[in-house]
Length: 64
Image (cartoon, rainbow, N blue to C red; front, side):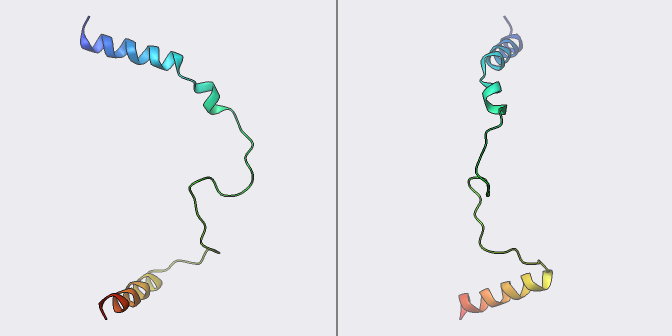
């Protein structure tokens, strides 16, 4: 058996026995952000001027 044939057949057999249907079932989750996402307050509009002023103020506090 050649290496490519072996890899192809082993990938096909792993895909056949994978628990895929369990992953795609809809589970009811409580309302709110998904796990791993943290909200730090209300969203604020973003602008380049705000970013520059933030970087400037941070540089003043770090190097003074």
